[in-house]
Length: 156
Image 1 (tube, helix red, strand yellow):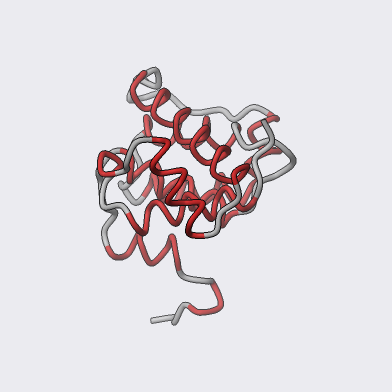
Image 2 (tube, helix red, strand yellow):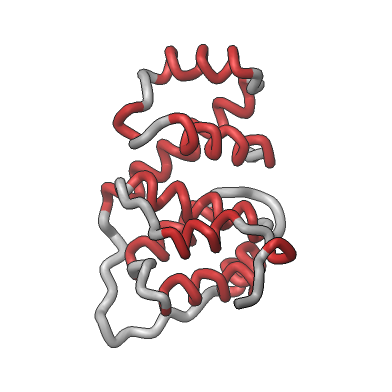
C-alpha cells in the first residue's frame, strides 16, 4: 500500500480531535466522520491501516535492547529516514523523552511509509503518534520541537 502525504493530515486530525486512541470510534463510524470532514476514502484507509500497524508493533514489545547496546542503522533506514530524521531521533533520545522501544517503533512506522526519504515533518508526526498511542503527552518543550517551524523559533 502506498501512503500519501494526506495520510499524515488524517493522523494529525485524529491527534487533535481525540484525547486518547481509546476514544476513537469504531472503524466504520470513524470513516464516516472523517469523510464528513472532507478526507478522501483512500486517505482514511491509508491512515487507519498505518495506525493498525502501529498498534501491532506497539503491542508486540519486540524492541527490547540491552542497556549497553549501540544502534547501527541499515542503509535502508538511513536512506528512508534521512540523516536529519535520524539526528532528530537521537536528539529526542538524548533528551530522555524517547525510549529505545519507542525509537524502534518510530523507525518501523517510518519504514512503513513507502517511497524515498520521508520529510522531517512527517517523521515528527510519526513521533507524535507513537507518544499518543502510548497515552503519553510530551512536555511543552518537546511539543514545541514537534510543531514549531525552525524559522519561527526564537533564540534565547
